[in-house]
Image (cartoon, rainbow, N blue to C red; front, side, top):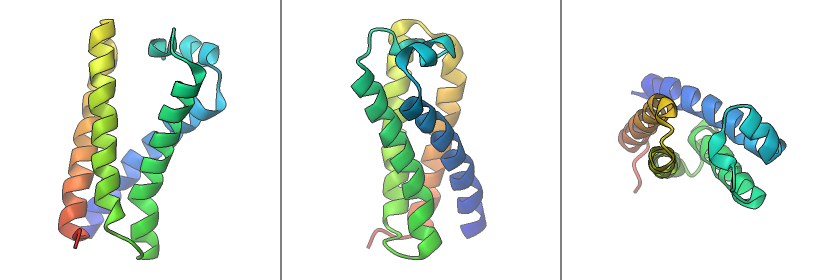
Length: 125
């Protein structure tokens, strides 16, 4: 189970570090030019906050199990990323941006699997 967790959590953390870091480092105009059309009309602070939540979620998946401390945070990070993707899917559907949905659904499923395996591997109690 631990190997499965590391594979899923590693893929998910890589994706969220990349996308979240991009949101933290680039302007809204640069993000929109790169295909993130949802940032149009969104305050830059909100975009930065989303990026920060994604990076913290990625860190929560990896760091506690890596250092064997507060490992109960790993499945909670997975649940947080499920919520991030649920909101993202809602926003993309509202905007009619259906071509982004497969990636969002894949990330949602990976986050669910990471949270589930995390609960089995690193119990909350």
